[in-house]
Length: 119
Image 1: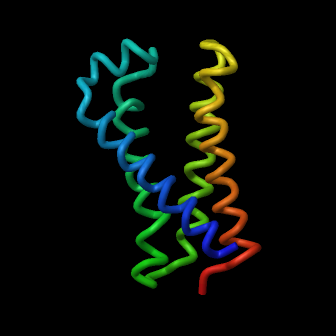
Image 2 (image 1 turned 45 degrees about the horizontal axis):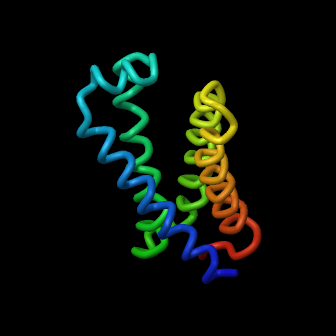
């Protein structure tokens, strides 16, 4: 189970780091036009994604407060719930990616809290 959790953590960290950096590099006008969300929110979300992606790996790898890893995963679950709700008007298929990502983040949060807790 520990190996499975590490694999999912690394994959999710890569996904959130990549997605967050891409959103930060995009012009804010384009992001707000695509989503209809305020500009400050469209800057906050990628920063939260980057920090969450780092939080999935760094505390455990550096052995500095590894209990932060499940908290980072739980925060990413909240972000993915919002992404799923925002994607639903585009159809169920559009909402599947954030839903599956959120479920994987939930798996990491639950796994690191209950199944294989980090020291």
